[in-house]
Length: 56
Image (cartoon, rainbow, N blue to C red; front, top):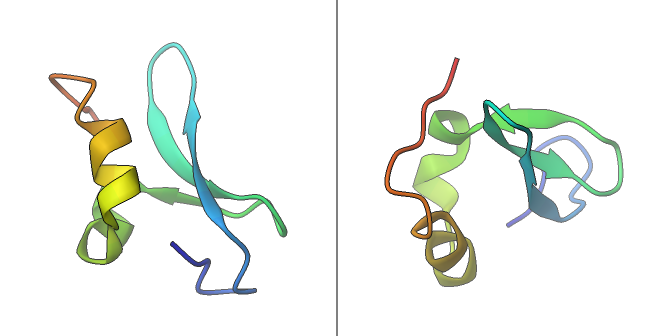
């Protein structure tokens, strides 16, 4: 997945109470619902490990 701002790679960024997608180039963070329409198979597989994703 690519960052809309700089075309860097989006990676899953977890903390104890949230999951976000973070660009490894510019550092911009996206909430899951902001990029859900762009999820690729690799990211979907990773996110499927959690039975519930709560976004703030």
